[in-house]
Image 1 (spheres, rainbow, N blue to C red):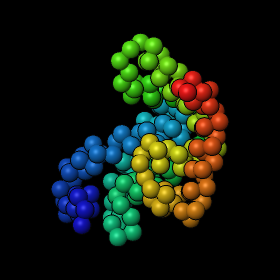
Image 2 (image 1 turned 90 degrees about the vertical axis):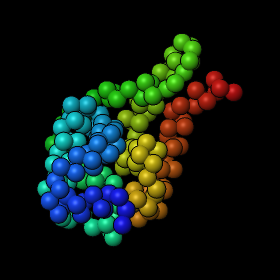
Image 3 (image 1 turned 30 degrees about the vertical axis):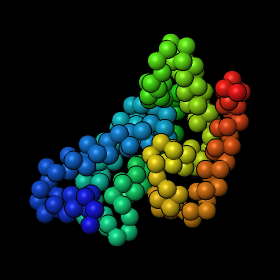
Length: 183
């Protein structure tokens, strides 16, 4: 049994304070996923809270033989985000998630170039169809395998591979000017 499954078991046995460990562990991935899908930082914060509340309330339905806890939790996140999008919540063109802040460029020019690249990547991600964006975010930002994403999305792994291929092609096309600068 893995560490997450053991934590769930202990929480269900009455050690409810241990749920905070799962929240600490998965707060960032859930928030990143919600921010990238909803494109609204306030809505992403609200959804992230809903995800953990729902996970806590439905913890008995988690089955470690069917999926990893992270996959189960990200499935809840996906569903909450899709519900939010169905409400026709206004979407913004850029997220408050600061990808440029993740860069560790040492010179101002490098930082400026990195910030511009991240800004263009953010715009290109926003332009992707939701299914492709979700697959890309889960694969590249969350590090999930195609099989894990297929579980979250409830589609065949081949469909995920196809979505990833299309997303990567679209992103490469959108960012080709940056590739040209590097050569």
